[in-house]
Length: 466
Image (tube, rainbow, N blue to C red; front, side, top):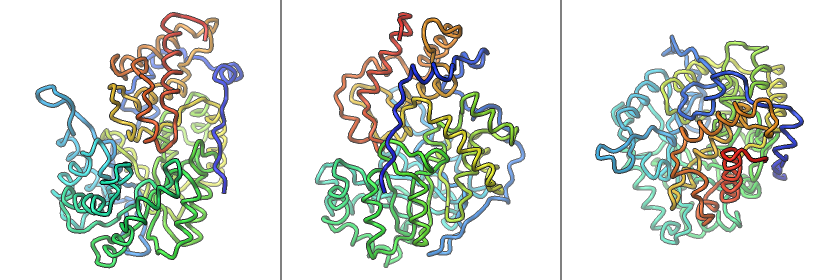
């Protein structure tokens, strides 16, 4: 099985072909503002049912798992009281988790690496306020760091026990080998992280003892690792893969088509946990042309609703993860799966048409996982990429100085950039040190993309030809 290579399209030629400029409206001018909490427009989040959540049964444990899983990678942050840095907004996290549980969500996915190491602590505080049988905890052996002390058996076991401590539990419902397939030599990295140090044997014994109820792994990267793990005699309870209607047949970079991944798991009766149903948020706010295609079929549905319905429709999907920072997003996703209306064959074909259209846009394949953070020079790398991608999706990337919508698109991009990313954290402060690049599971050449965005922004500011 070969990875799909990124379809590199020159930005100017693409925009010239489609003739896309900025949408002539006030909303479009400020459409690249990352503070917007709407998902592809106004969303009706009234009357969220408490008793209609769709559940799937975990085949090996019999768990009734909510089709919507809460990804705890993107919990809300706030400034510390003294103004010295950020911290988890625990009060808001508690409110989000309480609402999720009250409305049928029972799967919560975290990791020692998420949110600068704060996610497990915040998740444990929020969940431990509820009866333990009301929720399932998923966390990970996140020993990706190249530090030998972290990858050692002792270091990895310490991480495992610390997860239980932070999550305030004496057993873990779902435990994953985190992000297998990464590294310059993916097979070597796999062996170093889980085999040579004996940690996989340790985790298998923990499963036998019942302290791990379900054991699996999450996959990013080299498909040879995916195939190898499926070829072993280990009985995997589940596997987490990236799946959405673009990645189904058109995975880019080092990702692999979800059609293949899901198919191989289904052959072996292994259930899939889905990550990135919105492709890092890029499927939540579609460009004008893509939205029109979808609204001809279901005028009231948001782009996010379409994406989540697609990700949850295959019967071998156990749960679909969403990192929900805002209550509006949580409510909408609960409604989508309360109950699920599976996508039809016609709707699937329509989403393929939308995927083909989106593939023509020169997006940066960032999923905002934050593995590249913190930047030693203070850049907000995910926010920079997210702003650029939003503006491309919304048509707020001017073609050239002669474009009749140039002024409007220029203002939209620059105003939104300053609102989304503080000036001292923008791309022009990148030193190309390269510290970030090895940590990116999408294999984005981050310094190169920073240079490209910085040049684009400077040309906009100085009104130079691109």
